[in-house]
Image (cartoon, rainbow, N blue to C red; front, side):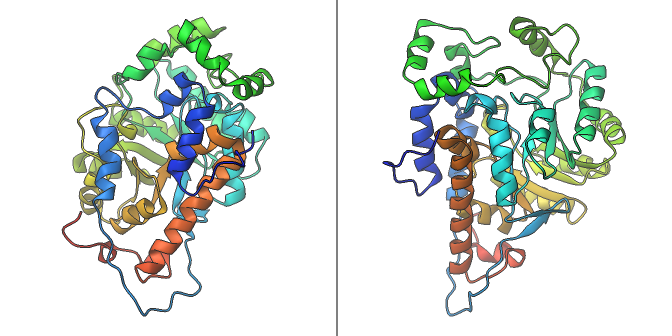
Length: 386
């Protein structure tokens, strides 16, 4: 599904509008929503916009550089694609297409436990190592096998999500009947009828369920059993001892996602993890929590240079990336922006989003008077706006 030639796309917001037209409502809303009143979802974007840049002039801006590393892996800019569930329902074979776009552009891709395409699917269609995101389930034998499968696929880092022990209530998903299997209400069927290209693409693929789970978890044989299994599997007993166990079992680079408090950030350092991600799950868990960017400086100050700090939540432009880097983030993860691109135009759409972000980041860095992303610090920002 190519990007529409009749639509001018210059920003991530432009891409979002196209995705909204092309993706069935239940799956678009799944990606573009938060929990309860969505106040934290909105705050992630709004608080970034309040941060102002210092404009600097008469500086040599030739030969600019955006390239960096994230846990030792090269990145064309300080961005990685975040783990997002149901990516393959934004566009058929979505995880494969997004991973291919990330590889070609030169940024890391992270596959979710709750992906439609499996670890093995993505590994078979890419050549660069990708990262795998892990949810901790009650079935620890399944988790051990999942970690071993990520090892076998030569995943170069494990991203352990800590902020989804209990699922936050997302009203749009409940209204839309989003479940496994999806509830085919008259409204959903009528909406699907308006998305013929999406439906055609989905009919042409065999990847239409959670392939990391189906056929791998005990007792999961169809969508109904998968739904029941998933509903009872997220583990509310997850604690820091489990992080130690997972780190030993994995044995490679470990990234902890979902840190939003300086005290938890110090716990993350104590585990020996390689990086932490300041995140509130995109505003999809604890509604009323502070924005990611509001907590980023406090977390950075709390851990110093003891661990790499990244951020996700609210990134919608290259300017937002620069704001996060200026406040101490080694890099950012993007979820919704690449999902918009995927829904709007498959692999081409993801590539276009990455190009937009890189261009905005490059131009903004130059207008602030800097040539290298590694020079960026809080001096780029107007004091008092963060």
